[in-house]
Image (tube, rainbow over the protein chains, first blue to last red):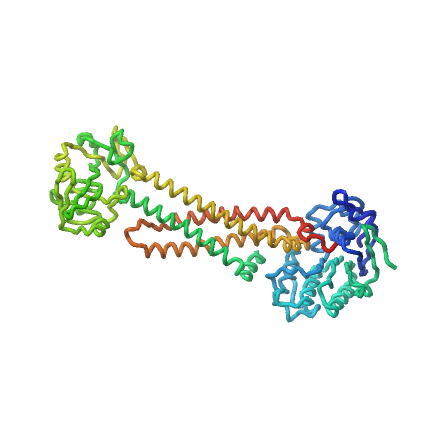
Length: 214
Length: 343
């Protein structure tokens, strides 16, 4: 689904990623772990087409990303990639339903936001602004927003970091469901070792080098 | 657009302060405009109210009525003679006022109709002047220079020239007065049509613009108005720039998830547009209300066309100012705005 070959990312003289190669397949839930500053976020931004690598290749369904334009990458982010952030990063003045509608309408689609939110147990929260939602609810809205255009790749940056254990488990179960039942590729950065049990593979990144944890 | 509208409605407290400041700035611009227009009108009101198109003056008068001295024998066909001269008017109580005398034939086509009823030595004075100075119909006033006495028999509205009250008299009274000063002239020949003459001819507007002090006064006001428009636009731009900068992370997230800059930008433009239009409408209403409450002797004039013109100008400059945060938005790299996603 997405394949990295000898990817390097350099900022000035600092090499953040070195010789990173791996492939993520459809239906896989992959955890990305490593200490702070190890290059996890950079890797996630490369996977999310928010940066271009200094060297190496990234293939998305046999499309070489270096050959795509900014507009093509924006459309891919809108239609084929779902982003989930550590803090939900919802638009503060849009209701839960409108968060989903914004993304769907941008893709030229109409969405029954209430029904979509029901899947995440949020139907009765459809008309609520983010400030009126709990942390767990906000994160579930963010996941619903990330999935509204039915992306094939979901990238989650510490989606459980600001949640209590119960909510964190719910979020991981949702992501696991998306990978195993809907065939999406899900890559999750996490510092919480308890969440690793939900993942099919664990990749460790340290000093810019990537390795698979058995 | 929808996003911009929803932000405006749901984050209204944030925009409220901006709306108040914008309203006050626009109010200031409209009040200054009202005063400028009022003074401009007051400066040449008597000329503006004459139903004429063209004025012939002596060539060396440089467009000023009080500097023109013409021989009646030079009067072109289909014109009417007009006398204009400054006078120091002495009232019974000994106080003196500077006034401008306007004189037309008794059977004038352009001057006040009441002139037809005036006898020699009788004059009409500006209504406002009569009200302010306690001068009333039936009073006598004296020319300080010639000591000739005139009887006030009526009033005329908007009788102002170069901010001085106007005293209307017939050319017959004018001639009598001039004779006492040893002169015999008229100041202008006026007509509703174009005048065929070797004298210098001017349009009514040109004559108004040549009223002493008019250009200097209006230029000062024009500078004030322009400065206020620029300041107002800068403040609006600064507000929207700060507002956009505060939201950079949020906007970066939106760009990261694939929302177009255009979608976000349209919302910003809508906000600038609505905020300016609403602030302008409130200011317009306030200016009109204040205008109604101001005392009559304050030269304030509310004109819809001028006000709407300035409104349009403020809107255009505000929208142009809005392009600066739009530019910042366009250049925004989602990855930079988001910072390290974690590390």
